[in-house]
Length: 429
Image 1: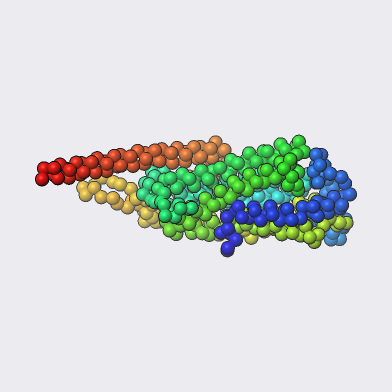
Image 2 (image 1 turned 180 degrees about the vertical axis):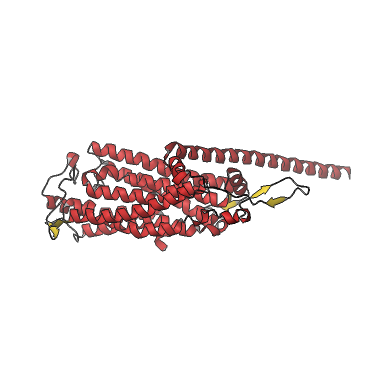
C-alpha cells in the first residue's frame, strides 16, 4: 500500500493545495444554496448550521433521517465488535502492560465512530466535537509505540538493556549512527507531542468557534481554522514519521508479534479519512455535489462525509479484531509449566543464565474484567505511564552517558600511557 508509506506532511500539503484551487466556487455554492449572508466576521459559512433536513430523499424520508438510521446501524455494529474486543482483553488480562495498550489502540475506532455519528445527529455541534477525533488518535498512536517497545522488551530494565546495546542509522544522515536509547528518546518525544498538541488544538477550536473566529471553510489568516489545521498537520506528520521510522528499524526484533498487520490496521483509518477529504473537496469544488431540494448544507458539508466514515469503520473494526486478538494472552491451565515466559538470572553452581517456566496462573483483570476497566478508564494511570516512561528513558540515558564518559576517559588514559611509554623508550634508545 504505497499511500500508507507516504509521510503525512505530503498529505497535508496536497490537501491545502486543493483547498486553494476551489475555495471560492465551494463557498459561493454553499451560500447560493442557502440564500443567506456570511457569518460573524465575514466567515463564508454561517456561524450556526441550522436546518436538519431538506426535501424527501427516499419516499417520505429525508437524507438526514436516512443518514441517521444507516450510520446508527453501522455505529451499533462497530461498538459491538470493538468494545467486545476490549472487554475480552479486560477479562483475559494475563499481560496487563501489553493489553492495556491494546485497549487504548482499539479505543480509537469506537471513539471516532461515536463522534462521527453525533456529528450527523447534531450538525450544529460538529465544530465543537470534530477536533477531539485527533485526540483519540494521538493517544492510540502513543499506546502503539509503547506496545512495540513491550514486544521487544517487557520490563523497563529489559528496555534499557536492549536499547543501550543498539545503534541505529540517522534518518537524514545514514552514514552516522545514533545510540538506541537516544533513538528511543527521540521517537518517544516525537509521538508524545501529538496527543498533547491535538488536545490543545481541540480546546482552541471550541474556544475560537464560540467566539465565531474559527470558520471551518476559510483559509484566511485572520481565522483560526487555517492555523489550527497547520499545527495539527505538522504534529501528525512528526508523530507518524516517528512511528514509521521506529517500525522500519525495529521490525526485525518483533516478527512473531505481526507488527505490520497492527500498523496497517491503525494507519488505514488515517489514510482513508484523508483520501475522502480530498475526494469531497474535488466533488464540491467541481459542483458534482451541491445543496439542493433534497440535500442541505448540513448534508453536503457534514452528513455525507461522516456517513462514509461510519460505513467504512465496519470492515475496519473486523480487521482490528483480527490484528489484535486475545488468543495469545489466553492461559492454558493444562500447560502452565510448559510455557516459557522470559529469561531470568538465577544463582547456581555454574552461575548460568537459565530459561524459567514462570507463567501467570490467573488473569489480572478481576471479575468480568472490571478491575482492568477501572485501570484503563483512570486518566491518572495514563499520566503515570507518561511519567514512568519519561523517567525510565531519561535516567537510562544519563547513566549511559556517564558510562560513555568513563570509557572515553579510560581510553584517553591508555593512549596517554602508551604514548608516554613509546616516548620514553625512544629517548632511552
